[in-house]
Image (cartoon, rainbow, N blue to C red; front, side, top):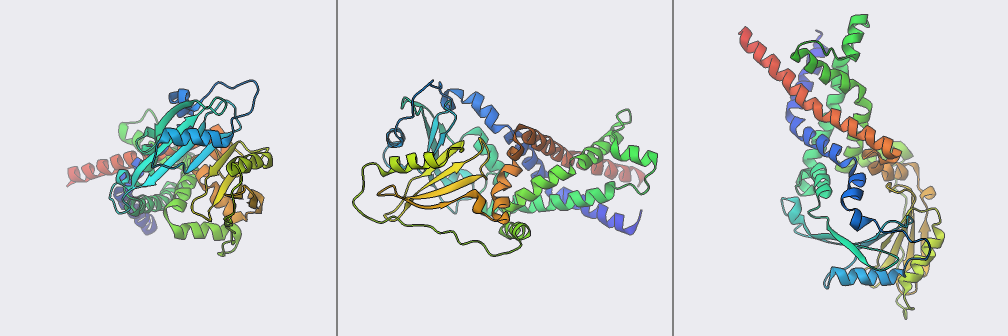
Length: 383
């Protein structure tokens, strides 16, 4: 064995022992979250889905918003809403309030995080979901920061993901056959199932790791974008060729005598401007000069392909529009990052690939640890 391979193996071993447990948690939670939408649509079908009417328009947005506020109760405001082109889905009205910013655990950093779902054609409340304690959101936050405050959790998950990237590279170096003979090729590309446990375990560490390397690398790199600002900037620079961010103009509402139901006027205008959008999100205005933000998102699950409108909160007048096509390559790639990370960018096939890659990534710390344990026992017996 050459000196270079020895050093590579040493780095691979100890980085794996340092980060293995965190990588295992991140990978398993990634597997579970891959089909979150499909499972949620079944588990919460009575809440999320409604009987699609054959004809008729939804009730005015202000009526549904009022119903949501009434259901949420006094002291809480609707921070965000999602309406769907799909007539078989309930509309979502969300309320959120942060908790102790300095708390150590995730649950203490949130006061409440709830959504009310309403049938847009009848105004009936179909149900309520407490996202703070909802299973998939807990899985997501475990993946995001180990259920710790972002200040601590994301440093741990980010550093572990960075180590995992280095391990993928060192693992590829160690996997690479010294000679491309037939026996070496079989050893590198096939699992020898009829061999003993140690050999099968060794092959299960090397062979699936090689086949899934590109996918696991993509998952890891997109994870780093969330974890580190400096990595976001690197990705932005590589994609756009510049480190200068575009100046996005944020308008202000002008305090005048308000017209009747400006939110309805703005919402109907947005619907007319977004004929191809699958979802329309609304962020109600906050403060005297705040504006109503309405996004038109093309894609039933993805988020990247969206146009953004700003409306005056008093008159419903359109103040600004920024389309997806106006973004530069860096903005577009950053906007796609979440959809790439969860595999939704390619639809169901993409989520299946993300699930398989996460499953293989979860197996690597286990098979790697067993290889190390076996070698350690072998050394003891020799001594």
